[in-house]
Amino acid sequence: LGDVYKRQDENRVIVHLDNGGVILAIWESDIGTKIIELDSTGSLVSELYSEVIYPISGIVKNENGDYICSSVNAESDPGNTGYLFKMNYLGELIWARIIGDSGPLIYRQDLVGLVRSQDNMYVAGGNSYEYNEYQNDSNGVYNENVRLVKFGDDGELIWERKYHYVDSPEDIHTLVD
Image (cartoon, rainbow, N blue to C red):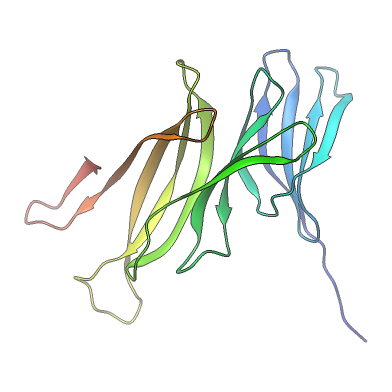
């Protein structure tokens, strides 16, 4: 029958704007990410393709019309890493930053949400999956940790925190640097 090709279009995030409109970040499997802005009546305001091919998980539009986005970099080694980037209204990349740890115990990392803070900075949240060296079973057990990062409009990292399970006699969860 020949090759069968399935195209996937997925709405990855929707954001409500102060003017009543919305922004949609759509991932198209054969193209990449498309950002659509609609006004409060549902009419198209803008539509652009991002140079970034990874699915967007969080998006904020700043006062200059630029888009600050969170995503995942699926091509990093040893596994996925969180990915932050800023692009202009034409979809051109202004800056990009990889967020995450490296090393043999890292399995996968991602950023799944993004908000603008009251001090006009940005906070992104995601997950980090790290191999648990204390459990030696065939399933390859991983600790799942929560990662938070705060950064400025220029992409400069202000702080990064992880909330995770600490292997100890008390079996506690804690916020760590």
